[in-house]
Length: 304
Image 1 (cartoon, rainbow, N blue to C red):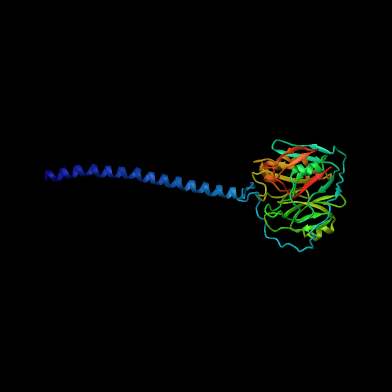
Image 2 (cartoon, rainbow, N blue to C red):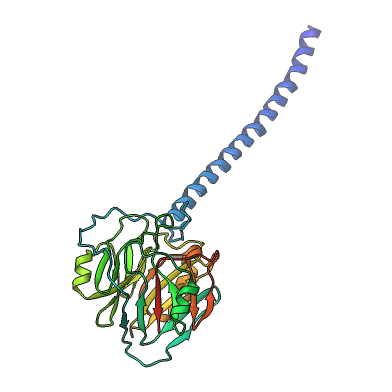
């Protein structure tokens, strides 16, 4: 009897202790589950926001371009060689200084008013030249690298016109999906690969320059497709008065920085040109922006 009573007294506190230990353990598990659910919810919603944001995209490609969507390219007659390069007079609506420096931090911008313009490339494989070669030939000019080319074969890329003749049709790849066109009457316009080459020629195209995408078309800013990333990029554009703009954005400026730099220029068209080590600009024989690696390129625009 004594042993039995003793057993009951000693067992009661043991059960109470066991219950007290279980309660905080279950509470900790519930708290951890709530924290885990909260982290999952925040991560899920964060991913949704990031995927819809308009941000420059880095790509594995050395030139930073994102392949264009599949578009059927209309066939067109192509000339192997368009002859010696000729000048086209671009007529601006207002009279300004011939060349005006509008550069801001990280973005080199020059405006050309009523210039005569020459495109150096005249054939599918035009050969490559150093900036110094073009300066020697056209010393009193504003000069910029323009169209992309295959560095192995030297073949120029995308929609290419000189002297009113087509020598390369659109490319349905990461390259050659947009072009800046100067017409015979001196007017200018931006196009993408959805407009057939023959149609552009019929409208009077005399020269064209291009490589990447078109960022502004007929005064409308187009969504960023990732063509402009952290690398150096060159551009050509025009405003409502038909002034020509030659632009180079430096490393890490990106899409947002570039668009902010040109926001007050009221551009009608803005086309991405060849970039990276190809980007280079000179004025009146002086280097404004040097190539990173002293690169020869296949196509320059010369304004005087």
